[in-house]
Length: 277
Image (cartoon, rainbow, N blue to C red; front, side, top):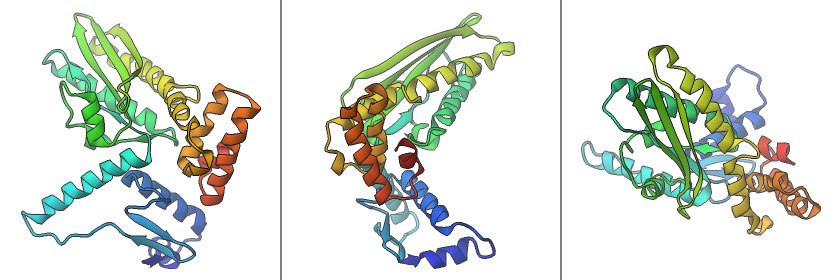
């Protein structure tokens, strides 16, 4: 166990900071990276008024044998936790129709820009490129999602023909197998238009998927509308509240508001919950 005071001495020894806000933000970020949960912790446990404790199993590394196994175990634990505790999103590498380095470079840039754009939405949990980069070529989207612990997967392809490039993308719900959204973008393909596809298509894709009235908020809130609001985690309460933007009514507002009020009581530093409330 490490106390909040010890964390403050280690992290901000000579600086005046809002310790409660900074620690809550740091711990929430760490939990998102690990797909952990304050209600059902697998890695970081909060000890009320005392500090934090790391509770995941720790194995002694034996060079060449156990170290690899421990890493695999942690990866499986993390992916399993993602599937259980959150609506994680994975963006897979684009499938390429030809062995052209220029097309490959633009495809990699598109995926990187899309991930960056989606990561700016604080409610979204986006899996890092380092985890998704191995899914190159033709893959089973639902299997990839299951392996990564992702509820949603964005996949697509990029191909060129002469002076034209075609980007096709689709968003899949890996649990139901439903195709939630798909679009095709045709743009010029030439060295002088290298950024045109990025600057035009990426914002369209990101906003269509992630904006308040986008595909993901609608899907997430619809799933959570059928659940008991009193049993929602603070994160789920925020996602549940998106339904109010789709159906502006007292009947919709009451359960969403009640869930958010419980959320801010559980996690007073959760800015998204306060904003939606």
